[in-house]
Length: 150
Image 1 (tube, rainbow, N blue to C red):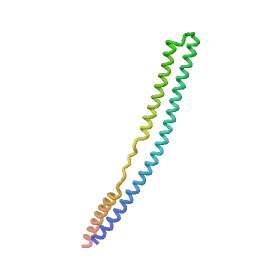
Image 2 (image 1 turned 120 degrees about the vertical axis):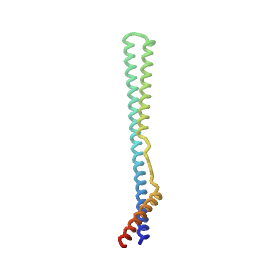
Image 3 (image 1 turned 60 degrees about the vertical axis):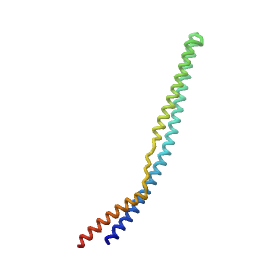
Image 4 (image 1 turned 45 degrees about the vertical axis):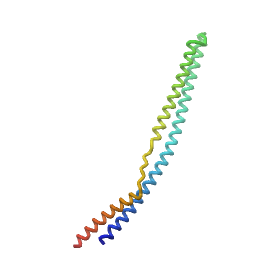
């Protein structure tokens, strides 16, 4: 009986640990799959939002350029000098706003795609550790029983 109980508990502990490690690995893989799917969805939303921001920047620039044209036409000034400088500034502002939208989208996607910490458990190692724990428990119980019977 002194050997049978530790062996039985070692086998049971090892089997339970292997099963637990396998199930944990399966759950982690499923979680990663769901996370990647959600990240893809969020990334597409961010890109769509970035496209809207860039369109707004273009529309704002076109609105400003239209106002500049109207003001230049009403004042009777030519299309050189200040008019050209203002038009270039509107184009530059549009470009800067579009670059900012792209960089913001890139940063947001980077935050969304932070790597998920996958830490698989080695079932063999878990089984060995479980078997050792079970054997130790079995020896302790067996020794206790033998002492009580003395």
